[in-house]
Amino acid sequence: MILTGKYRRKARELAFKTLYTSDIADKDLDTAFNEYLERYKNSFSDKTLEYAKFLIDGLKDKKEDIDEKIKSHLTDWKFERLGYPERALLRLGTFEILYSPIKDKKRVFVDILDFSNCYLSSKKGTKFINGILNAIYRESRNYPSAPSSTSNS
Image 1: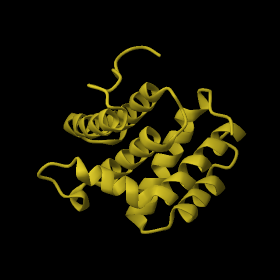
Image 2: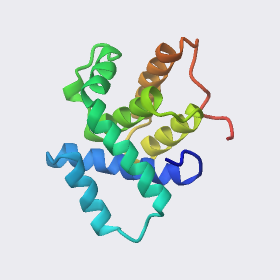
Image 3: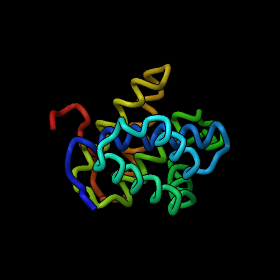
Image 4: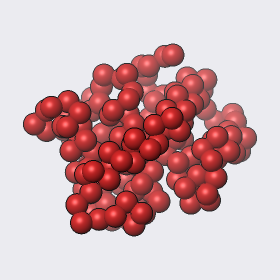
C-alpha cells in the first residue's frame, strides 16, 4: 500500500462522506462506498481510491473499538446524540490516529478540522472534535498535547 502523497486528503473526504451516508441512510459502509464510486468513478486517482478503501476497510473492522474510544472521551454527552457529520469525523480521525501506519498525524488533524469547518454549521463543533481527537491522540501517544493544526505542513 502506498502511504504518502496529497491524495490522502481526497481519500479522507471520500471516507468521511461514505461514513456520513452510511450512518444517515442506515447502509453498510461497502454499499455507501460503492455508490460513491459509481457516481464519481472518474473523479479519483488510483492512489486516492486505494487509500479510501484502506480507510473504509479499517473503519469496518475497528468500528466498535473506535466508538468505545470516542465514548470514553465524551463528558456529559451521549454518543448517540452526536450529529451524523460529527460522528463520521470523529470515527475517521480516531481510526487514523490509532490504527493508520501514517506517521504524520498532524496532517490528519489538519484535514479533519478543515472538513469540520466545511461541513459543520458551528465553530463549536470544530472545537469539540478537536478536543476529543486531541485527547485520543495524547492518550495513544502519552504526549502532553496533540500536534498543532495551525502550523504549515
